[in-house]
View 1: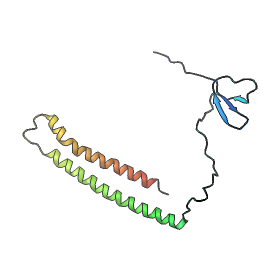
View 2: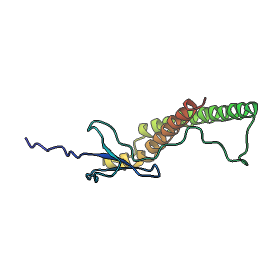
View 3: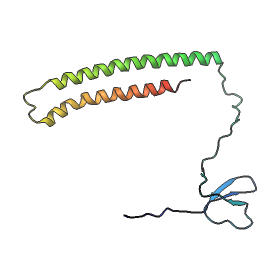
View 4: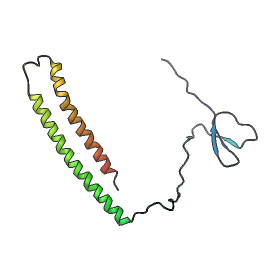
Length: 142
């Protein structure tokens, strides 16, 4: 059995005079304002987002009732799309089943059968993925 050693490095958090935070794995000088982080502490290199960032002055505001109406319209449209996609999936499955039942004399090689059926299988898979995406989108609504 081959054992691979884990890489370990000391990580330091340094704050400059302007308040900018920098993480480094090189040992800082004694006069730098740095502190060593514990090895099991997670380090994020993505800057955080301010929690109370106000909207710009000209940013359009939407009334709560208007937004609820928009959300209801969106849900209704997504429900209609879901219903239509379910019908398309049922039709695609029916067409696939019909094609699977057909055997022509020139398809002695099973690979030809597979090649003939593949577009129908692809169509079924496409509608199944669309249904999953619509259900996920509906699940994300408030």
